[in-house]
Image (cartoon, rainbow, N blue to C red; front, top):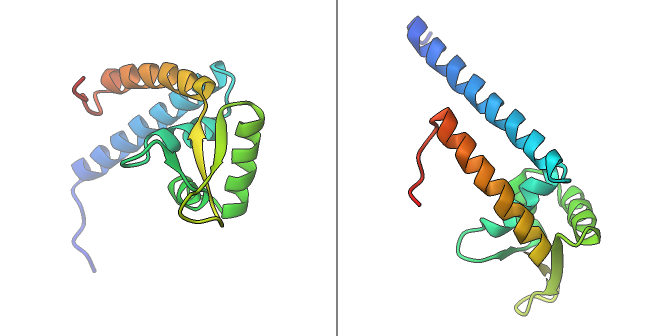
Length: 130
């Protein structure tokens, strides 16, 4: 049986979880205020934040969002219908497409990211350098 943890560890874990929940609540509300669902915001961020490039495939996005491939296709289609993302052929693999932000999607994401960074600073989670 593992050694019992000190109460201070539980307090730290509980405080961390509370802070994360406050941030998620803030994030969901901020997305809605910009006319997006929280899932649409997550998709835009996953695309623009994909390591090393400004596009991603459906499979990569499904993994990043922890949703099924089918659910990701539906989300991308809804975002495409709202002119937030575009699909373009993958020149290396005709079986997949690259998903990228439109100018409208990028503009909304930039505004949302600015308020998120301020909230992160307010919560003192970390202080990214500018």
